[in-house]
Image 1 (cartoon, one colour):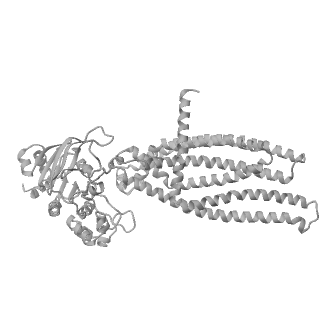
Image 2: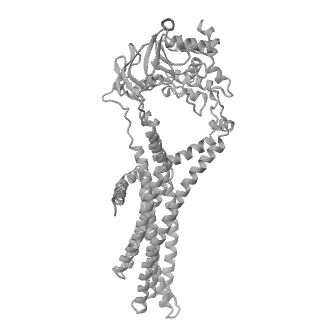
Length: 619
């Protein structure tokens, strides 16, 4: 056996051992989700596991009673044992059906609770991990594997565990019945199980290995499916004729994965048939021996029937148990992806002890010798970067794409921590401030406004949940952001559902959504306002009016505006010009124009391209 084969075998054995060691964690997940239902589930399974034993024993009694009655006169006394056995068999059958119905109800309730518990764990983890995880393909693979199976695997695992427990109880009882005829028969039954167990474990491992290795391809399939059915891409797909191309890509990937899956199943079925033939051969030899024993007068017809039922029942149970065992192993492999996801740990966490955030800035926000690069990227977004944002002022940050402007907002909101250096608020390192406190101190409007399928009022109210959707505060925020008139034109005003994903929803234009998102940020009466391209969807006629509102709203607060529009930047108290991760110019609009350089050059170019802005620029 070469080293490659030995290495692969050792790797699989280690993986199998790891899965076995994860069983307690799987059980703990089930127990935490539904303790009472789990106790009822196990109790019912134990009862149902004993029912076939009673049926087999009563069948032997019925057959022996009937054989004895055929040699005597037909009287109640002679036929009573057979009648009683028949009635008891009927009672056991009825009780089994009742218990099975009760078990189905209990298992459904238990499965629903486990499914909800797992979904809650996934949701909590997805909002707990760092924003950096969402910029990693490996994270999305991990999330996809955890979420893709979270709905179906718990129910499947319960079915398999339940079947395994119930079959084990029945098999132990039947083995006890067979044991009365000789230990060698039990040994042959056990040997007949081994090939089936090997086949099941091997091919469940291969199936999981295939599933894990094809995660990226399955995500591409999901991607093409979403593009082909998403309303966001519908117009461009039709305009550019991309539909057939995406369909071909989807079909190509599906054909490849389907062929691989069918090949794996074909090999699995051939191996399973071979294992079944070996098992049936062992059973046939045992039954032949029992029949020969009876013909020699060492048993009754009832013994043969009992042995046949016990042996065939055992064979059936063994096949079912190996299948259940394999599925338990298989499902635990899939649930290991869930545990892999739940074990991710954020790096941006509170230091101990943590400080409270200031209610109002009195000095400045400072970037001090900050170096930062995004995870997975070799390029640094900021290198030994210094910047001061004075308290209670409106500061504009301008510069070309890729200069690092939006990175400043992400560091200020502490979505990331610097690789080196520090960001301070009134001299306090952001890492020393409690994370929840820090983020409550900040209002942010992101470059692409986030839309929620909710009423207009709710879309604004989520900006500050502590205000409990105060209608007056929501209305004031809408007025400040210039969203009030937009909302008043809607069919039900502030109660109008927004978005088109659900019935009766109303879609807004990009600029209107931006105003609603701005109102959400303004509702959050925080001392620091961070705005990333806040007027990117507005026309130049609306900018001046909007900035006047911002200037009024920012009174006594600190506002940072990232913008490409110089008609916005010129109205700020202080302008910082960034280029390739550094501040290359700072000053007021007149000062920067007088100094020349990148700002003055860009200003002239923008004014030439947008002459209508001259009336607002005063030139």
